[in-house]
Length: 103
Image 1: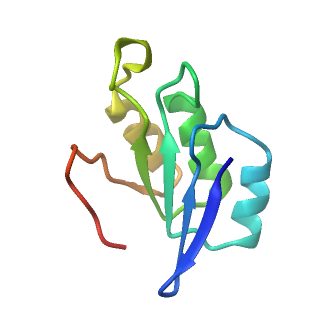
Image 2: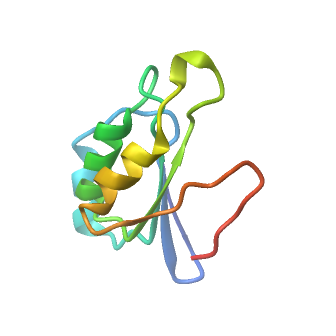
Image 3: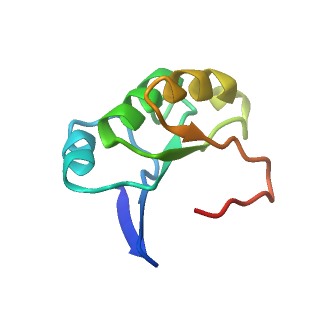
């Protein structure tokens, strides 16, 4: 399940642990998404390629990858996601544990 959060004039999409779905396209058409938090771990969720496609479908202005590299089964290179997602015009922030951003 994902959540669309609106606060302080911003819209955030938190995908949770999900795979790519066509509903993301509808969310992108009906909402101006400032930030998308997307899983990229690939085994239980989207991988880097599907998450980049989600950025395109959501028309997200900015994206942050999540749910990856915490154990061997979900090890991926977030730089791959960043490269592919930025092709769709989204700024991507790859955060280290404890880091934060402002939107």
